[in-house]
Image 1: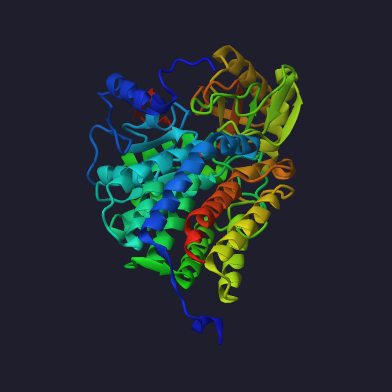
Image 2 (image 1 turned 135 degrees about the vertical axis):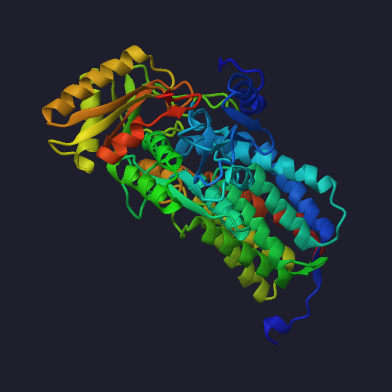
Length: 333
Length: 222
């Protein structure tokens, strides 16, 4: 394992210290329990958004704390859900009296820890609503799996719901916006290489020089299918077709197309992916109203990408365009 | 005479429970890498690391524990796991110990019947938190056979040590029976058919818990 770390045990703590030094104008970092809040929290009368998950997906979630997006983020250990005491402390720190939304990616650990946290918060009188993100079409949504994973749509939900909360919309409406994003977004990921959790010291799975894994999640967990590496044209088709067919996205639809890097893939390749995706959507009569390209929900140093499509309407487009000022996403200010 | 009216002897003391927890921490530390390896085959390669972090935190709490209340002790273990493990293991093992503690509230020593009631409550807690059914390829596949074997042996009037060993053996069998299963809960379920052929890491740590109980709690009975 070759990494820019001092000690595998201290990776998250040292990262948080770096974030605190770099972005002290936007966020405040609390250690033990670990959470990141916007500097002006709690914002009175505003619905607060709290998310969290394992570390190793930077900039998500800590990089999305700030005006127009999250009020707090709880980082767990690398690829490990944070714990209820972190979420409870973060929720209390940002509760501005209008209620708190927990944005939870549909992973067994995240769901259970957030569930325990919500129980703790509610027992002490804080109004908490939980919203699940489960946009990954690579997983069959059935009684026989833990359900679809929450992946790329998480970033879009945090931005869009953050804008809705910033407009002082009430709790129920912010929750409705979250659900609308989830209902209209679908994603799929792929990997060219595995990744190494610092504490484990070796790659989570092995991929041959000529192999790729289609349908990966964001934790280095293997996907559903291993194939020989193919030209990006074919890979985009393998990823985008199940996305388009699932919702389904139809001719005449306007979408937000999000091409996400998994951490080890350079922008030059992500733009080639976007080029192929745009051609494929052109062929189906689907318009790209907005786009986001870059590493926003990563999987350590994994090479690969994910594609997320979100069907837009005027409301979602307006909320997407609204100002945002966070370490990881910033425009309109 | 019905089994419930058999003369019941105290089988487990506060010190025994402490020894059990310490032994479990020790066995988790020794098996950290093998549990993580099992998890990397069908999950996300952190089960041993997470459990070891949690049990290390538990050990630090044990050092400061001066109370004789077994319920309070187990509740502390549960809360510590909930706040230090993360992932799915934190809420599940945390809930297991919290329920063991609730069932032993105020007790300074335990009978074999108490132990059965505690394990029953603990397993119920794991099921209600994780919503797993038998054969979903989870901890439950080791814990339910362990609970059933324990309850059967105790109600048949078997010595407590034998009952604990039967419970550990049933957990081991349940753990091995997860190998051919296709996972239906947790991250392993994303693999579909590819999850078959691997032993479930959660069932493995649950077997270690039951085996450690047999090794540390079972030697009071003659």
